[in-house]
Amino acid sequence: MRNYFKVLLVALLILPTGLLKANGPGENDPIEGRWDLTVNFEGRVVASWLEVRHTGINGYIGRFVWEGGSARPISKVEFNNGRVFFHIPAQWEKTDKELIFNGVLADGKLSGTITNTNERTYAFVGERAPKLWRAAEPKWGTPITLFNGKDLTGWQTTSKDNQWVVKDGVLTSPRSGSNIRTEKTFNDFKLHIEFRYPKESNSGVYLRGRYEIQIEDNIGMEPMSLYLGGIYGFIDPWLNMAKAPGEWQSFDVELVGRMVTVIANGTTVIYKQEIPGVTGGALDSKEGEPGPLMMQGDHGPIEYRNIILTPAIN
Image (cartoon, rainbow, N blue to C red; front, top):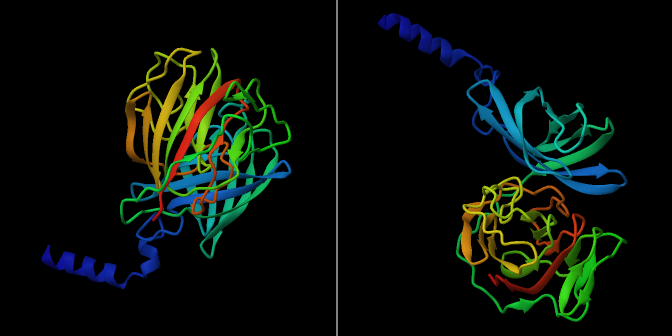
């Protein structure tokens, strides 16, 4: 028996290193991790995101964020000879067609095509998402009042369909239309923002224009990432603190790197949790850069007021 193990050890030592990893993921795996994707979509550039993780010794699973919707699981990611492939069912689309991802990994970059459930194909490029780790706690600067209560100074809409108006000191979107964002961009910050919606309406606050905190009329529902106070598709709030439609509500948020804390209507519902990547509808996928504050205006009427941001100064 002792001689058998000696022979086995020698055999393993003389095997080519590549063969030891040929059937599955290993250390410093070239595909495993998070990827920020940029997609040429219907004449515009949109953000997308991919995460690949190993499962056991012979396979990969993952998560994927398309240009809209929430993060969805991938039951199997195929990775062979630099080629990446997976397919996932439709999410909000009413079809039995699947989304198909075909990529190539070369020189640390991803590129390829995504065929949507409408069977149209779009080109993409991707790079590894930054870790955004902060070695020290931030020092906070002077609070900035982003909305002056009079007009849209300091703000711009993301499309030509501008339905946003200022009414009685309130930033108001009376109907579905464009999103609105600050002209200035920010890195790490603390934010206080108040909002009000009518029955069955929906909006969201995008931190750095990339990570949506959900706003939706779902009072009394079980807490989940798709409901009020969640990081859309990624982080469930501990509690659903939604008030009734027509009442003023608030978020107090701290974003440092990827770490987020959310206080909804005075109660902490997320505490220093990591945001994995961009959420559906993100302004872009450039996670390593500062970004604006953006509010969603394409899902129904919404009102905002008392928007105060305190930037980090280190």
